[in-house]
Amino acid sequence: MTEDPRPARPDRPDRLGLGEGIRWTGEALVLVDTVVCVGETMAALAPEPPESLDTGESLRLSVAGAESNVAMYLADLGVSAVWLSALGDDPFGRRVRAAVAAANVDVSGVRSDPHRPTGLLVKDPGPAGTRVHYYRSGSAASALGPDILDDPRLGPAALVHLTGVTPALSPSCGALVERALATPPAERRHAISFDVNHRPALWPDGTAATVLRDLADRADIVFVGLDEARHLWGADLDACGVRELLPHPRLLVVKDGGREATALDGDGRVVTVPAPRTEVVEPVGAGDAFAAGFLAGLLRGGALTSALRLGHITAASALGVTGDHGPLPDAATVERLLGLTERAWAARA
Image (tube, rainbow, N blue to C red; front, side, top):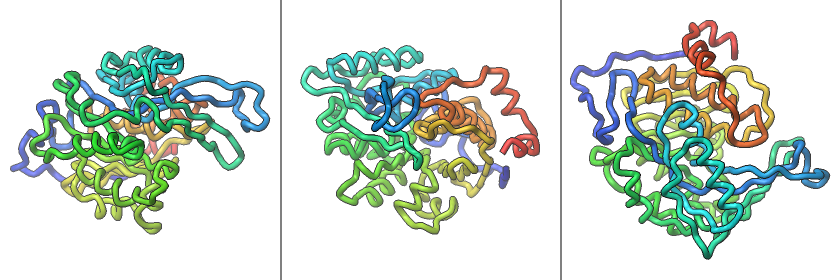
């Protein structure tokens, strides 16, 4: 774990111009009030126990969606979370709504579409990893557009969380993300968090590299995996190289798989925290869990080191289950882990 602690500039204003709910404490962004997550969630089918679809005898039904994953983990961590989306008026849609609501997420703004179905994905575990098959074309959420940003639940929000999945779903979904990022950062009512979350199957036209870089560079807080950054923008990139490509976000977080995560702020501070050893059952959903943990760490008013640690702790809960949403350690364990010395934390890596 390394940190380049530079003193806060004496002339730096307390507020970052990211909305009334965002303040700068000298070392951390502090979020107050609600986080709103916007994007599609699908019903998910996976063999139980985990094995190939070719040989599995039964399928387990769950829910899967990057933005609702973040909302559920934020709620687990004590953050007020809202999920905005659309679902089909069908059994899958009712199942998804109930599952997200059961995690103490506000789903009152989720629309029910009588004409379009709830999206579906099917997981196919194998020796080389889990393949995911999507059945989401024409889904209820793909019809979302910029008007969802007029939802009154965004009024008191400190932060809106989006991912790179949404602009790939349809032109109207792309317009949604464009509108969210159109306001200059200093004039925003709330900060925008954006997880690049590149899904190659959703970008058959080859525009992902350009579109996702442009969107990410207009956000306030950005999450990107080093592997996906290399796939999109250059095989030789490291965290600092990604920062050169995305110079404008207030915070950039680069996740290097199960090895480490690095946060880079606008003052040139670079903080790297190694990931603890974790038994991996399935990696799907771990990135969303990390994002939620990191954002919750900022909410706690912690330094970047603490936020990165909480990201790792939360990600580990997703890595240990076949679904996207696993149980967190109890609060006392989380606090103990956050309070470890640098050497003790590194010994867990």
